[in-house]
Length: 402
Image (cartoon, rainbow, N blue to C red; front, top):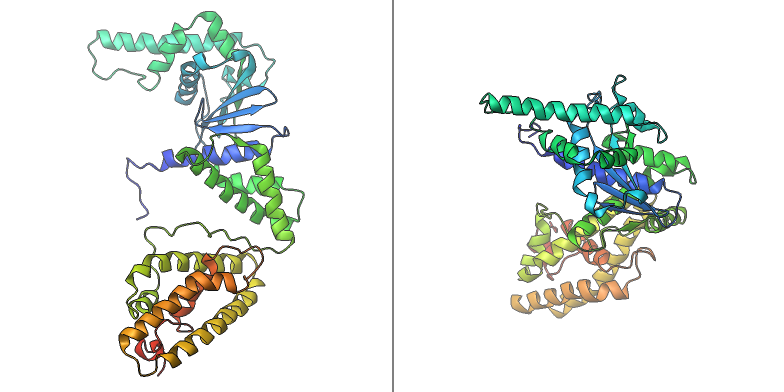
């Protein structure tokens, strides 16, 4: 289904993803080595760099021309309210407040003063006070008239919170605000990251940016799941970058899927299950599916990223098939004339060998592919076409030998 309902969560989901991608680009462009970034703590993005705390409130849109910002914009007031809410946790003398938006500023708005940190904000402060008072006044008038739906609902709490602050605190907050309009949207962030990677050949930049984004997204997920600290340091990002570049320069395979799990909707080829059923090894099914998926995804990715690896992968398939064939031939000979139960047991022994012994005894595809999952999964991948199998008579029983 391509359509979205009026209650679609697309905007909210994109907003969160934008925070993550923006944070990556923000940290990448920092020049201070000890810079650290947090998502969704004091603000959407919090950057700590060189002793300064920068709170960034992000407003995203995929619209080609989002509405210009004015002192009446909902996004402006929601941002002000977010900063007022965290005031007790801030030392404003060491903090800068950024409103980051893909929208532009209305040319008639005094918000333009927020582009220059040295600009006087007195006129803007007066404009914001006037707007807040107007909102509250019109709501009060509507309430006195007995109207059910009061105007300016989306800004009311923010306007009230701002007006209730002492004048000096209003001015202090505004003195710390910087506006960053006209930012790129989420569609372009990975491209922008690639453009900034100037220390490698241009042909590799998009690929490196893609790998950095994938790594970064895992860090964000792990941070929100409690699997890692919320703070992501710039040195982690730089370290990952240097590792990616080294892998590319040395033509090293990266086993991206060694510890990943297949999506819940993944269905392996039916032949994987049939090969296992043939030896009554139903308890092996899930581990077979998991490792077959890991190997299949790795093979596909390596072949796409570097087509020269296709031949090496094919040669390694032949190597695994050869080692399997020795075991299978000996097993088949030993099972000659034996009952089907014995044949199934010997088949389970061969399956166990492919899982526990083969990854240790057969040299890896590449020195960097150290996880046993690739060997385990490749055997199941090869079983789909009948190049390997577990039962002594699998070729006849599954129709591979005509």
